[in-house]
Image 1 (cartoon, rainbow, N blue to C red):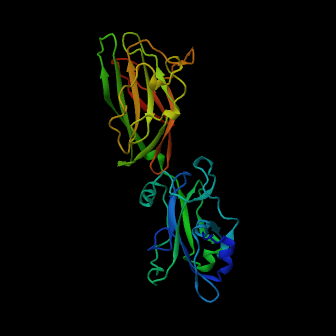
Image 2 (cartoon, rainbow, N blue to C red):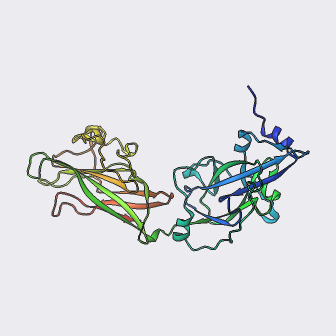
Image 3 (spheres, rainbow, N blue to C red):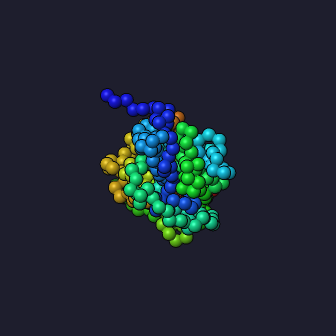
Length: 355
């Protein structure tokens, strides 16, 4: 079996880099690019290299070598500032900047950022001659970057002691400008639909399941949603002769099952709510998920059955704090609550209150 050379071993063969570039768009190698500073969205970058030895022959970097390339902040005179930025920092742990080996869970759309973030100016795009134009056999690796920062930075790539900005002062660095979405322009809507109906209002036993489809818009344009977190189950005891109790759980966009991992050990005599009476006997319980809308599933029942924490009766919870995340990684803190408590109808309307 052939052993891959170590980074140090490969670097010792390199006399210089003919190409050592970093860019977002291969046709436009200079200029600035925007990304949301929500710690979740990642901008995809490409690092392109062509290394040569002291007699001009190409030195091929192994897959391990390419994977070891990191990003570093570039300051005055194209010199590096500090150490390379951290790599593969988790969404909730990111404080500043991090590079990543994969694209993560959220989408990148610079056009959307340009329209709906705070105003910004960027450097003019300049068309550059690429290595492909010169028919050179370069090597490439993709790197993604996320940030929680609010200040624009210049970044270059680093391999050992080689800095891309020192190889090419313009094409060896990229400017990234963090932006914040104008959340005051985002409006949430919910549409309630009856999914299942067993029995009738005058029957001794009946229960209903409603699906509340939650959508969002920004300045009239659809804002696709991805995740919902209500931190578990919430419920209302209701009133006698109408709905005795109801409970809600949530599902992410396009998914057919509630987020069970968020549910506490709350149910009838300590049984998980989706396994307690009344059972949601449909598989899957959400039959019509929508790609860009999250769902709050609400079950109403006429029986006098209340939830328990083990053997103790659980206090009802008529509202729940939570959040919704869009496809770009922006998080919106909301309060979910029952808007009408059996005033005229047995159903309850879901209300979303921005924080």
